[in-house]
Length: 149
Image (tube, rainbow, N blue to C red):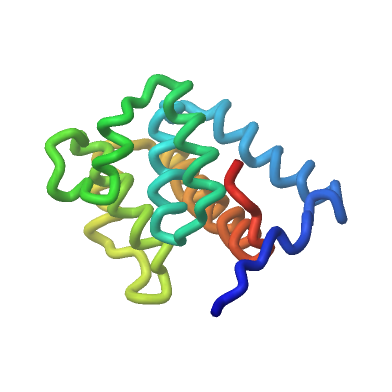
């Protein structure tokens, strides 16, 4: 029988400076011109791909607070087939998946060009940083077995 391992380590407690630095990235993202619900959609989708239960739970709550609907959150794993997502959101979700699974094929020129058709270089920078930042946090959460609240 597999024994469920509880939360292993609180890295932020062990080294608070890391949390301070990580928090600055989040603060900067929320000051960007990206819509807050788009930031949360990125965070949820990346967390779904990485299977980080803590971050899925946390960012679903944030998304709801930023006006996202439960229906769209439920449809997120099937965004390619769902009519609930705009062309802009589809371009961002495609890049979120390609960057999260960057070891497969990198980020395609096609996906990048789709972003360029909707966003400025600064906004593309913010999107890529948001995706990478969430991947980083997922890896902390999963490796330390951070439990969903």
